[in-house]
Amino acid sequence: MRKKLSIMIPCYNEEENVREICAAVIDTLEKELSDYDYEILFIDNCSTDKTRVYLRQMCADNPKVKAILNAKNFGQFNSPYYGMCQTTGDCTITLCCDFQDPVELIPQFVKEWENGYMIVSGIKTASKENKLMRFMRTCYYKVIRKMSDVEQIEHFTGFGLYDKSFIQVLRDLKDPTPFIRGIVAELGYKRKDISYTQPKRKAGKTHNNWATLYDAAMLSFTSYTKGGLRLATILGFVFSVLGIIISLVYLILKLVFWDRFVAGMIPILLVVCVFGSAQLFFIGLIGEYILSMNKRIMNRPLVIEEERLNFGKEEENEGC
Image (cartoon, rainbow, N blue to C red; front, side, top):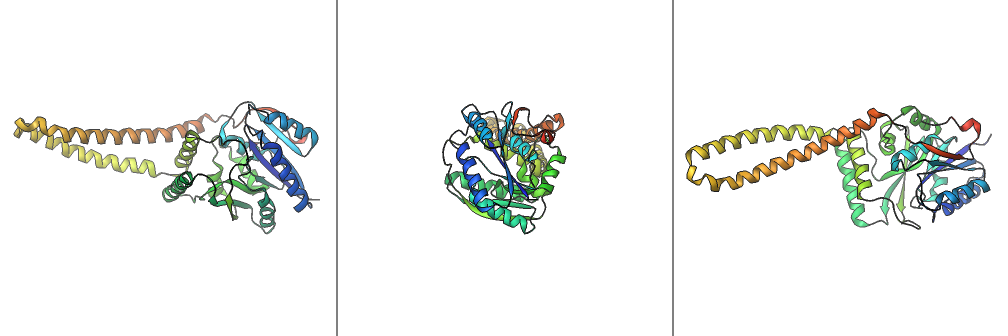
């Protein structure tokens, strides 16, 4: 019996890319991996353009192409994670719909999987994206890596191959706020890293913005680091000591140098502003941790499906 490869592609408003990526994947699989059976699963995060129209056409033309249509947009982490849990192959390969994850690496991933690696990760060692964005990402990864007790994989976006045993781990995990990059580093099996240069999007515009990037950074930070809370505790103690010292100095100035007291208040006010700003910063940081905890406590479903296309009855109960 032939082994089965699952290709999982999340999409949102990718009408310019969805048919092209499907054709490219099928071409690669049939030419270079013809000994394997395959399925291609698209999970659509409630697109508002023609993406769903094209998905229906593709599913009608090819029974090996499947689609899950979400009832709404469930975010950049929940939808791909859920899609991975719905695959049925001996391994699952995830890639973006915009061609920034090179399709031509799929045969290399499969080769390393056959060599015994349970996870094969695509690592962006170079990128044609904005240089400032690349620099900021690099700084972010290094900070997280230093502060985390768990290994963090730099410039890993989730693009890679996962053995079905690891997919089962994801199903059993039942994490309502999944962060696949951290989960791979924390719970992943024997892993092989493959370097590649990330190209620009083939068509369309990126759906990432500062808000989504901040959300990703905070999810990683609050899930895998204690450093923020420890820093808040340490600096809180230091500021408390400094606050007591400044209060005593303030009292002495008031009692001994009353005539010059008003002029001496200016630097004291500046110090109070600095302390107040630090307090607000750490209150906000602690709030991020609480928000992350709150999402996990509510334990809401990862995704609510609106429709499935080309799934058999035996596959209806797959999932997280």
